[in-house]
Image (cartoon, rainbow, N blue to C red; front, side, top):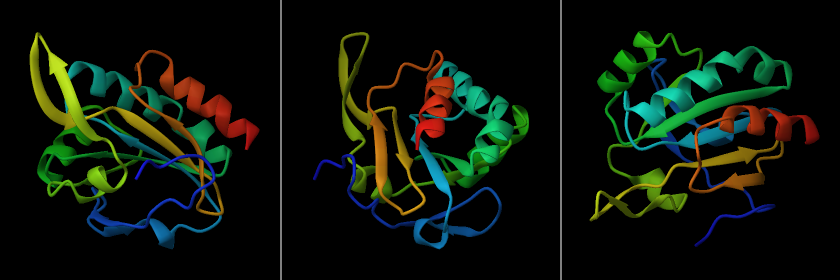
Length: 154
């Protein structure tokens, strides 16, 4: 199923870098920026994560939280978060359950090789738990700024 605008964001539970189990439905009255990325500490993912971190105060002022999700382990996430002083939590989906539920597991190609992986995608979920906007095949340059601009329109 393709997730799109105006449908309810599927609930999920995943381990978080704040040492708790994060559950989407427990977040009430906040917008949620959920960005799926391929791998901790790789060039594109680092830029994207640092950009969201830089804008985190403005995102918070817009009644919103940011969460990054990849299939890396919590240990990997904790190192990544600490190394770049990320100001938000990362969620670990080693079993790919949420990655697949959100339809971001797909065919990719790199240097002519085809493989399955996380397609960089961001979901903006509004305070009512509905998907407000989806960015697929994200280009990291200025992406966080674009999401922040969209937040102001909600």
